[in-house]
Figure 1: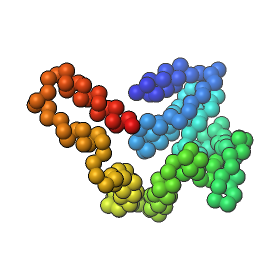
Figure 2: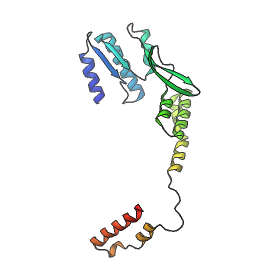
Figure 3: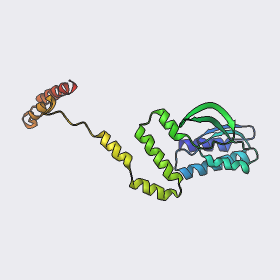
Figure 4: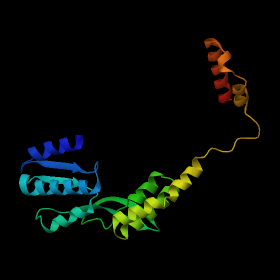
Length: 194
């Protein structure tokens, strides 16, 4: 809502003398809603406000508007691919990006290897065609969650009870005064920290 209120203010006040800078309009909603909102915003800035604008987006589909809107000029950040890695060149160049590098960015950000592998599998399935069917198939096959749940299971405890387990087993809460219960909690906490 905050993004939309800010965007509404910008679009309602923009004129031919404005310089509008918008970053990732529509990112906070469903993909098609976000794309539709971003598309309409670009058209409004071009056709109605006639404002100069820098419009950063990950919706590659918006580059198709350059065929209809005379003053629209898509640019992208240059990237060099090498040995299944990407190097961001920090240069802006005319044209549209030929693909998204989201998974590469996720890898650079340090997401776990299992997440990266699964993201690549999901991307491949989604790119193959009909998305709703692909999503249903992906939901039916969630190996990532099996891996994650196995990794999240605690290590097997050592043989025999720990000192804190033994102390806890000796406590009968029904026989304790409030002060004794509090003292017991402090003792247990000390044992857990050792």
